[in-house]
Image 1: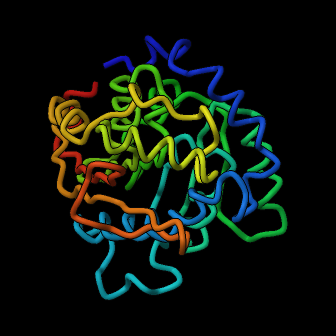
Image 2: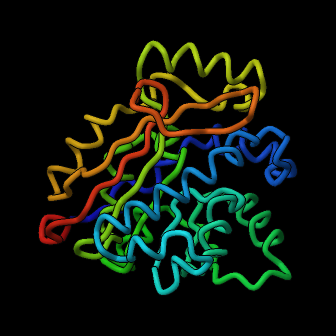
Length: 257
């Protein structure tokens, strides 16, 4: 399957520009991206849990500082690298991919002087996937798909990069009335950048699962995520109606060719 056919259009340029306006604040844990910083421990834990479930890493090693050693990871829509660096600190081999040259520059500047195995690339996932099929143990897009116009094309690009029995992971807001309200509240308390999220662009877990099922991915884990503003922390909860994390495993690569 040619995943590049819509790549030129598959970016919300206005949204990217809006995110770039706060690029200087991206690494301030109390700034406009504090929600991403607060979510980071849970995002990393979910990646590790997904890899344990597929046997890529042993459960007994989950708390070791090199738990991701030897694991090839693609962080799609990496922005300035908050999740990318966290995965690399656990000795993962990480590629950070993003369409914004400005945010990628911030990411590169931030990792200077650190011994991290990261390469940052400015490219669309659809283009990148055609050159790098079945290369990664895990491909993750955290808080990204809700910003993408053609979500199916985006998921297919991610899927093409996953090795057989490899993992595809997303975290994203659900499209519910509750998430509509909480998004507005998050903007008011400055956990989310104002106007950076459009509720109608949110995607439900079942919609993601249906797309992935068409290309022989089995969705194995879906967990709800809950933010507690007073403590500025995220936690996993049974309720998936606000934000969720989803893990799927590639069963067969033939449908992606």
